[in-house]
Amino acid sequence: MTKRFFFVLLLGLGLPKLPAAELKISKLIDVWPGMVPGEKGDVPAETLSTHKHLGAPIQKYNNVTKATLTVYKPDLAKDTGASVVICPGGGYQILAWDLEGTEVAAWLNSVGVTGVVLKYRVPRRKDRDKHVAPLQDAQRSVSLVRHHAKEWGLDPKRIGILGFSAGGHLSAAALTNYDNRHYKSVDEIDKVSCRPDFGVLIYPAYLVDEETKSKLSPELKITKNTPPVFFAHAADDRVPAEGSVRFWQELRRNGVSSELHIFPSGGHGYGLRPSKFPVTDWPNLCGDWLKSMGFLKR
Image 1: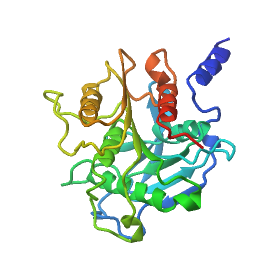
Image 2: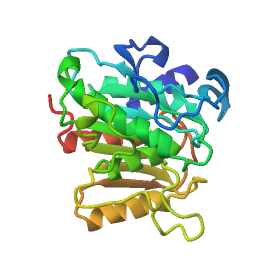
Image 3: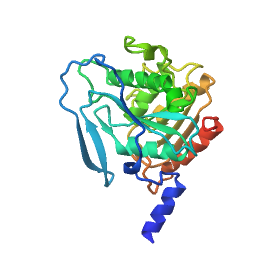
Image 4: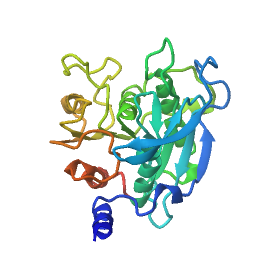
């Protein structure tokens, strides 16, 4: 009975029917063709480990110096041509690879969207703002996907970015800094726009100051041209929900159509994994928003 209830709950939440391990990688490419901007060779070797989180195992990447994109295409019969660059969270120290990466790609595939998981550089680099190296990776990644859109069967005007926690901040930075590339152009790919067409921010971190929780972080510059955004956050999250609220308010003031969901409880770091809290229904709500905005049209 318990197993059956769990299965029904998964379907009800719109979560992927297949485990992430059964996803089929369509492409695995390096973000940078050669030298990586700002790298000094002082980070230890990359590792992939497993540990417990909220009572279940998750995979995490440590010491990433070589940013990559892993592309997961949906079944052809479902493919809408839309795509999303996925930014896992981890405090800019590690990457929660399956919880906020490959499992998200599986869900996106289930609604006909290509999931592109970004393995961006962590941990925080010395003498640099926490998000600068990851933002370089994210900006380059959006340009890469758009550059290869025709080759990969994607619509270059329906490329989104989605992030959790620190990955949510990274996504927010990419949504608000597309007109200011944070590295010197490397090749022809960097002449292609790095502006995401929409964003999905799930319990995003670092959006407001710690003291008043009312001032947006200075790197987030919202204008009338900022892409539309979907937000989901729990009020009891240790990461203040005020960040999502303030970001949404600024979008609204600038006439950017967006959708905000603040739930009374649910905590932090749940990804797409179900719990007793309604906040874990965010994938269904997000799917409805994507449809209403026209991003899932075939």
